[in-house]
Length: 213
Image (cartoon, rainbow, N blue to C red):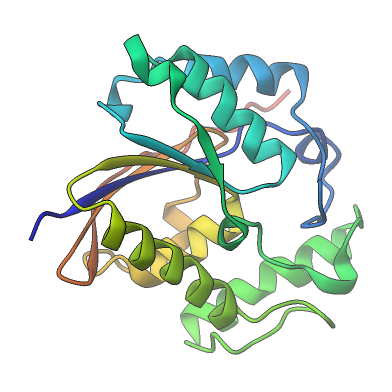
């Protein structure tokens, strides 16, 4: 049985990233001016390899990133359709939606300790948010079902920071759960192979250092 290669990418810088907004709502904010340029540059990354399909969260920041990346791919791969899938949406933040204050961000941040350090994926960081387990389950369902119909392919998947960091940390069988050393920068890549019902990560791109002004 052939493995399916998934190249996961976090979307480029969005306007909500600049504002520090906690958000998972649709359609969501678009890319910042720098983010659009960042997405086009990401399309030239050699690590993308020879892709056969492009999938994306339907949220605008992810979909636009996928389209910009696709447009910069070499040859006929620039003509690939961008398929959107609801299972790739950002972690549902519930009543924290739209907030920009430190308390809201800290409330979401504290969930990482519950999910990974205490292994409590059923934890919900806010009223009407989803649990960590629900987010991981829908992501895993996407991977399994896509791999089943696309064996042996190499697929680009553009999604969101919290969902990717949580789900990939939980599902990749060859990495530890110390997510604090593996934050995914905007347009950062995580390369994986799904084979024999296991997700294996040979390369997790190191986060770019933050610029201090």
